[in-house]
Length: 232
Image 1 (cartoon, rainbow, N blue to C red):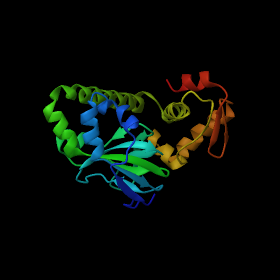
Image 2: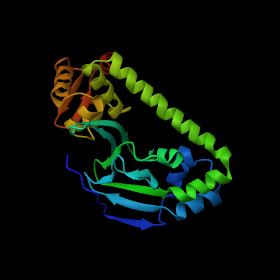
Image 3: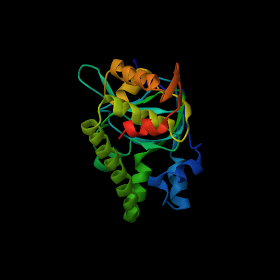
Image 4: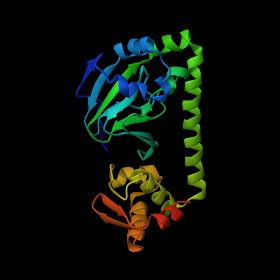
């Protein structure tokens, strides 16, 4: 999908403090520290397909999703894409470079009209240098990221395409049996790590087995037990 480096605009200093306080990385900040961080923040709005940042970009901020959905993706040299994470309201991304100084390790792209709270690294670095005990929150966040990576690697080894497709559909559905797929079939294939044709074949098999019903991008899970069994 073509991407463009654009946003509908950035509004400085107008952010949802309650949203930031629910982010694990920021939850232990004092009111004064949060106020200083929030004062430097901007609210940015993106259209579907807008690039928040590209792989190898020089980083200067982290982002919290206020609304919409953001894909975190890696691209191969021939342009193929693998979606490594789907970020929704309250999710944080772009934080790694704050701590290791490296360039962006993946690209971030809006999957639908989205609003982000973007926090410059400078004020956050000042807070962490003054109170290094806060870095335990960073350790918890990075440990959770590592666990997710371990799970994804295990899926790629132990699950076939059909199993990975079942697991991704269950993740996207959450606790709901009826849901609208928030991404395209191509983007779903990127999350599964397979071709669109193979993912569509897996979904067709679930429909044939009467585990799910599908109409365009709307799904209804009719046999969650079997779908969960296939995802293990």
